[in-house]
Image 1 (cartoon, rainbow, N blue to C red):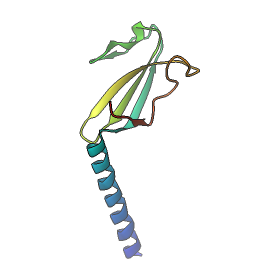
Image 2: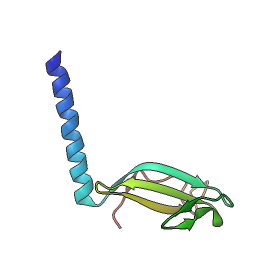
Image 3: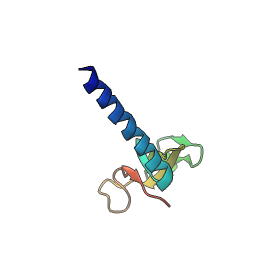
Image 4: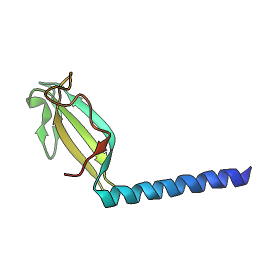
Length: 93
């Protein structure tokens, strides 16, 4: 029983290390939070200012392996003129 738990822990640990190395070396990020800001709502982000001043925004936070990055997208409920949801993986710029 203990051997199975140890192997599971080892596999999980190795998976986390490989994932971390992959994030750091590829400049990608994994979504950690998503916030939809409605027009007129006050939501201030240091790098972007008040996101509720426009026509609706989507604020996405990503873990890049080294830091947390915030990206703002235009929100569109049908996905035609903006994004309906944050992408799970942040593509390199």
